[in-house]
Amino acid sequence: MNSIRNRRAAAPLLALCVVALVGGAALAQRQFVKAAAGRPEIKVELAGSVERGGQALALDKVENVKPGEILDWRIVSSNDGTGAARDYKAVGHIPAGTTLVAGSPAAESGSVVTYSIDGGKTYAAQPVVEERQADGSVKKVAAPVSMYTEVRYEWSDALAPGGKLSASYKVRVK
Image 1 (tube, one colour):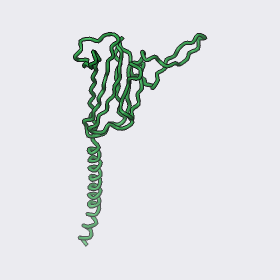
Image 2 (cartoon, rainbow, N blue to C red; image 1 turned 180 degrees about the vertical axis):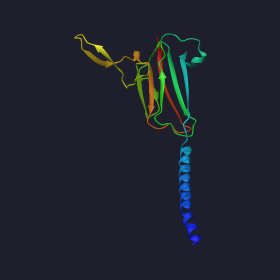
Image 3 (cartoon, rainbow, N blue to C red; image 1 turned 90 degrees about the horizontal axis):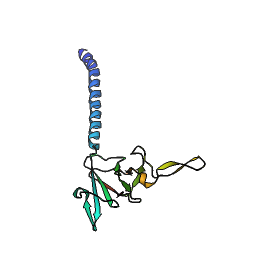
Image 4 (cartoon, rainbow, N blue to C red; image 1 turned 45 degrees about the vertical axis):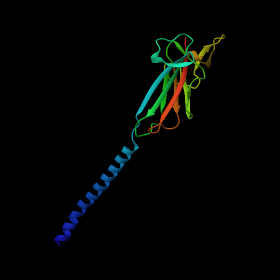
């Protein structure tokens, strides 16, 4: 009789141990999945060059640039982490005293290029400005390229671990 009572008393304790064991295993599995997913670690390199005498000279080797010269900017993003970087974007600044060369932004396939005219607050494929008409009405028109302040590249595919993405654009010195 005592043996039956001891077994009945031990049953809830045994059930509690089973629940704790199963719960602990589920938690450990969830933590393992998170660790296996990894984290992206993005490194970005920006390099500029100017063409002189048929040669591309790195901007860090040039003392100054002259009006009319074209500067070629290249952005290379690499993922040195263990997880993919989703919804990755790279932004190139258009320096003061320069103007974006229309049609020069380029990147790998699967990228969308947008532009900002307000210092990077908003982006659009074709930024617009309001222009007052002779009759006093206001009309939205395409902003001139000379107003562009940033160029942004967005990739539809994730930047995989060990992967690289590159983008480039050119500006003309005023």
